[in-house]
Amino acid sequence: MTILEIKNVSKSFGTGSSQTEVLRSIDFSLEEGEFVAIVGFSGSGKSTLMNLLAGLLKPDRGEVRFKGKLNPEPGPERGLVFQNYSLLPWLSVYENVRLAVDQVKADRPQQERDQCVRKYVEMVNLTPALAKKPGELSGGMRQRVSLARTLSMSPDVLLLDEPLGALDALTRAVLQDEIAKIWQNDRTTVLLITNDVDEALLLADRIVPLKPGPGATLGKEFKVDLARPRSRTALNHDAAFKEIRNAVVGYLNMVRDESREIRKATRAKPSVALPKLTPVDLRVT
Amino acid sequence: MPGYIELYNLGKTYETPKGPAVIVEGFNLNLAKGEIVALLGHSGCGKSTVLTMVAGLNSISAGGVVVDGKEIIGPGPDRGVVFQAPCLLPWMTAYENVMLGVDRVFPHATKQERAATVEYYMEVVGLGDSMHKTPAELSLGMQQRVGLARAFALSPKMLLLDEPFGMLDSLTRMELQEVLVKILEQDQKTALMVTHDVDEALFLANRIVMMTNGPRARVGDLLESPFEKPRKRAEVLAHPEYYQLRERMISFLEDQEHKRHKPAAA
Image 1: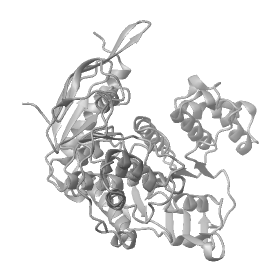
Image 2: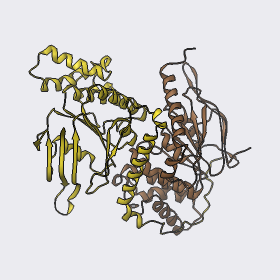
Image 3: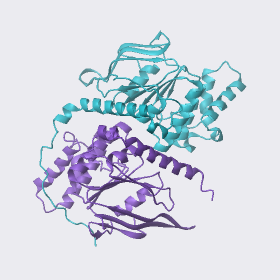
Image 4: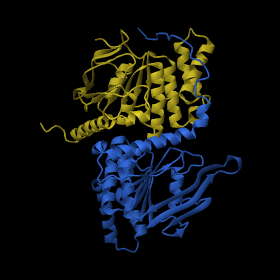
């Protein structure tokens, strides 16, 4: 069943001559229980697309449907995780998550809400840090809080907007494994936006490239038929993995080069010749 | 056999209140002219320490570094450095940032020759249209392109690259790797680079030195990269050995990571 769908959506920012079309005629649908990754270049309009899907922006043209409902307001059934964590700095880990639970599950008894907070904080392995404030946590830990907060609202769709983009490679790998594990257990519908092909290959069922803007459109889609759980090392001798990875990387580089062709043509070869010069030795002896 | 660049028994020790802390010890590496070597390891393993010692930015505790037959003492324009952050002067245009070093290193050249040198490298890195912009007007990827132009314009004997694309997103990183490989091949430069990105190391380097975790970091494994030059991304990825090598490197890094969490039981 299609849970989230956009049809022929365009979005521009600015007015008059300074108007820029960010997204042009985007069609996309997300099926229930699916994990889809949209992979795109920086500045191509990935976050605009996510905000449209979350209901934080309205499209100029076209429609967004969530469970059949046209252009719905943002709500907890579409849980969003941002790259910058967006935690309240004066609240502890527990209180940050509790705030969301109190909003969404206001009709449930105190004790149940308390258990709900603890369950999701435990799921992201942060129980020892329950009483800590965001300022006392590393980037990876903060993103875990953000993830726990979103999961605690039991959303129908999880929207992850470059959630690991600000983290170092090692922490990113650890969190990718945790996201994979959590998804394996509850199979929520997930849409992940990322610029990392390997992250997409490790997590998603389907990869949809977003071509470089302005006027970005979605590119050719790739199915990721790889058995789960996926291991970073073992994948390297999986023929299907190699094939998909090379195809996705090749496709992304191709659309990038196409989009920059005009600018490239003007400087295919340097217009000036490099003079033959010998540098002086500036070493202090 | 003496190399074009020699790192001989290189060591770094810091004095601490608890006694000396040995970060790097007995590190040996020879680079042939035109060779590109990548140092791969986790953060904190000492790979940047090796690089900054070769750059002359960090004092050498033991051993030495020889560049083209001369032992180094301190930093110099014979070794161009590209840092992880672009480190541009914000009040100067991209062009002026590159010219700053060019003026110093080519004082005997004419004004036109120096201008041509700067323009040439600005165009090579793809900034021909943006060279008169200030860093604030450029994206991070473009700023790092200026960093590359600045280093290459000095016509250094070797390039030292300290996680040059570590701050960029993975797609921009691929684009800049292609720019870098193009200039390195064109100018036939010798380079030592530090990275923790296995794909970057495989794509750019001729040899990859995998370092164990510090303290007392040493060479854990050594890998020759079999890909032909000029390097094209699609050809490198399609090479039958690519994913074998990639797996070997990822396994090495994962092993090191496990060792770090479980300090030696012995």
